[in-house]
Length: 78
Image (cartoon, rainbow, N blue to C red; front, side):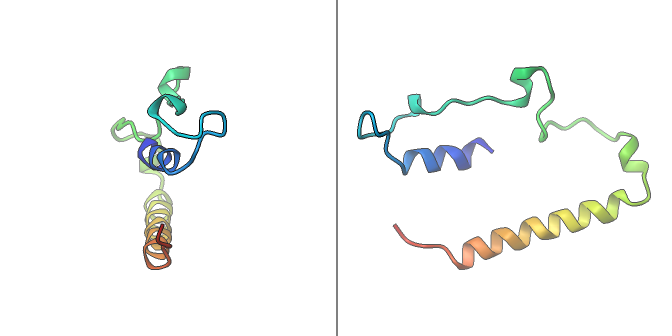
């Protein structure tokens, strides 16, 4: 999730320069190291045929949404 880290970097300060620029952020994706990135669509695979896959996926998405809603409701300004 490059966009999250990029926003965090822009809100911080580089101690050496007292500022932050895009050059202060190093981006390394899974594909950089020869592995597919987790958000790279790959189509249906063997795990999707597993009976528990839908349940696990549903619980994961629900928990992620709950976390994002908590962040939205408890955000701090500035």
